[in-house]
Every structure is written in C-alpha cells, then in structure tokens.
Length: 120
Length: 112
Image (cartoon, chains in turn green, purple):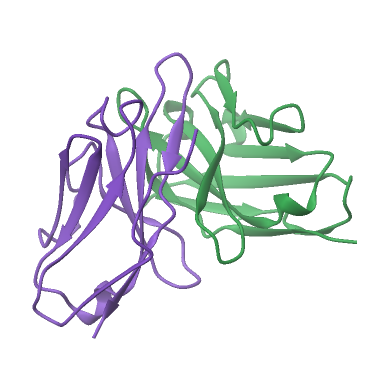
C-alpha cells in the first residue's frame, strides 16, 4: 500500500538550514505530483510547495519563496525540501503528500510528518 | 490569499448528523467545485475524506458527504460515531495560472 515517510526534522537556530526527506513506497512515485504541507503547533494546515512528476514545474507559497527549495529524485523514490534562512515562524510539523486531480487540487496520501523547531 | 473560514468547533451526539461549513470567496470556493476535506486525529496525519466537492475516496464511510452553495462548502457527517471526533479541515483550489490551494482554519468535532 501507498506509504510516505518523512525524516530530517529537528531543532535549528534562526537563520539556519535543514533538509527534509520523504521516502515513497507502494506506488509509482515518478507518476505523481507531490507537495509539502506544514502545520504549526496547535494551528491549521498551510500548503508550502509543489513539484510536478518530472520536477519541471515547481511552486511555492509566498511565505517560503526564496528560502525553501523543493526537489525530487525519481530513481530513489524520494522528495526533498531544502529549508534555508529559517525563522521562528517556520516551526511546524512538515508533511509530504501526494497530489491528485485535474487540476491538481487535493492530497490523497500523507506521511506521518517530521517536526521542525526553529529556536535559539 | 486568506484562509477559508470554518467554525472553531461543532458537537453532536452519537447517531445525530452535523454539518461543518467552509466559507471562501468567488476566487476559490465559489469559482471551482474543487473543495476537499481532511480528518485529523490528535498526533496523526490528515486523512482525505472528500475530494472535488462531493466525491469519497475508497474506504471512506458513506456517512461523510460534501456539498457546496455559492462561496460556502459543507461537510455533513450522519450517524455520528465516537471515532468521528477529530479536527476537520477544508481546502479549496484557488489558482489556474499557478498551483494554489487554501486551507480552512479547522473545526474541532466533539461527539458528546
């Protein structure tokens, strides 16, 4: 069955960097668009970034544009999020999710999430 | 893009029906029939319950249904069960030139 497993979260100082990974299994990863979505402690969901199946089409939320970079390695069935210039407001659980629909509008499988804490 | 508006909390007794509203604008909910709903139990990942307005993924109970009127989408849960107690989030497609979705703030459902 479809499975997504995130890793790479942790405690980082403001201005620091972190790279998140998401390992996919149980489906043909290279066929699907993928996204990162985050949830600050006690808060709601916020879409962060999106990448097409080939990696050519990429979008970011305004809140992370210029600081975060999404990428994927279809040979390794993996999705990544490079996070630079981290701020306290980036503290959240980060989920990777598979994107579906035409147009792409919903997320049908989610990982369990990885916690990123930005604090001095 | 502002978040969609959901009530902070709703409650109901076992067996009853409840409806959670999700209000957006003519740029998102009102312009597309592309609202999805997610259930999230504490400490767990969100789970897709409804997509493209009213479609249910395989395995989701038919007690869950979605609808839309104007700029407001709704999730109805009939025959409430204890395990339905969770947070629920709506999400609407909001862009055509770029990928853009907007989430609601979430609604805590309490089964009394």
